[in-house]
Amino acid sequence: MYRYYELRELESKAPKLFGIPTGTKLDEMFFKVEKEGDRYIKKPLGGVPHLAVMNITGVPDTGKSLLAEQFAITQASAGYRVLYVTVESPANFLYTAMKQRSEVLGADFSKVESNIVVIDASESDELRENPKALMETMAYAIKEKKVTNTIIDSITGLYEHKEVMARQIVRQFYNFMKRHRQTGIFVSQKRSAQASESAEAAGGLAVAHIVDGTIVLDKKLIESRWDVKLYGLPIGSVLRTIRIDGCRIAPHDSRMWVFEISEVGTIEIIAPLSEFIKKRAKEEDEE
Image (tube, rainbow, N blue to C red; front, side):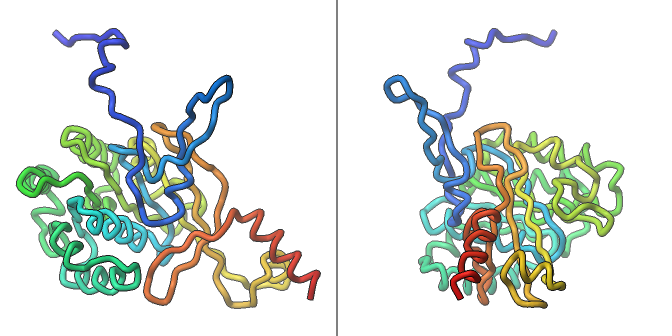
């Protein structure tokens, strides 16, 4: 017989609410509310919520993998073990990218390379097509290496030829993360027909509905005089935006923010889009 719980019985099992740093301004965009005297104060969480499984989605070349890698480097350089399941890019290419970004971020690469554990599913049909085999491998790595954070890049690659099963497959990996007490990042790809600013990805809303929260990355090509006037950017340039679409674990800033990708692939979140536009307009008026 299945049992039920009174809410108070769950207190001892409830996770503490604190942030797991990403190395970006996202750390200030999740928050918690605490009572001080007779007022409630918003305080930055300091990262994505502990034990949350977050979905990072966006059209191609919006910085999804870069954000996941920056999170991995930030955690590894702080001494925490990260499991990185690479489904798209072979592991040797991941090594090169991580080394370059570690140098730019000022991270100790000796710590990074010893604290990131990689499972290369990109060249293994068995791991990509058989969720049970992949989860068994992940469980072994998590136990042996004492991993606390897990990234799957991308979750889409695990159901790319069977999107009708997307919800079932995502649910299995989501439950796996919870069972092994992992703070998780799922990177998901969009199909060309899907709205670039939405949380929808390949498999529909399967990922967004199941995970604890979604971070949407987008880009806009500046291609008209109206775009130039509105954003203050030259024709042919790219405006990149990031938005927390939702998070069931912690309150968050839901505004659209502007960010940049440096030449070496690091992410810098600059300002809310509304403030970015106002600043550009003011600078233009002063000229």
